[in-house]
Length: 67
Image: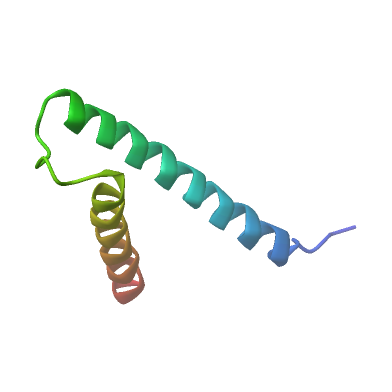
């Protein structure tokens, strides 16, 4: 007997995993850049989060274009 994959839960899990990895990577990158003094003084967490989000969205778009 063959069962069809549940696409709804699979997409939800993929998006949740992406968001969790995004938050973890952004936090680690922010702390590393802050520790080594590589961030401008007026920049905060949300500036780094925006930069990482821009890079991630560019990567997603390129993946869609090349597919």
